[in-house]
Length: 65
View 1 (tube, rainbow, N blue to C red):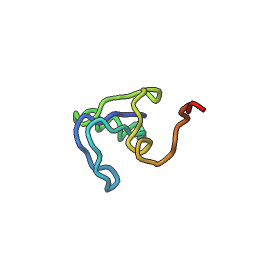
View 2 (view 1 turned 30 degrees about the horizontal axis):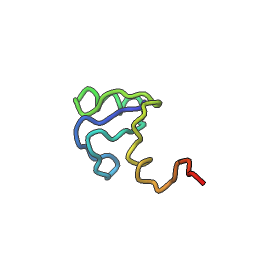
View 3 (view 1 turned 90 degrees about the vertical axis):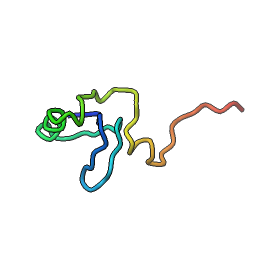
View 4 (view 1 turned 180 degrees about the vertical axis):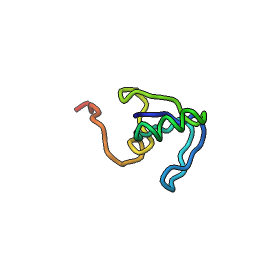
């Protein structure tokens, strides 16, 4: 289940910020949602995950030649 954090949270020893997105098993995701720490998010939301944003991978950008 994809979630978006509403508050800072530590997951697997890594500090995550509000707005970061995670893909968790359903029970963990639902628990965080019930605690008010996260909300459900779709996998196709346009905002990249923190991992995607900082992975160093490049996206296809057109360059004028």
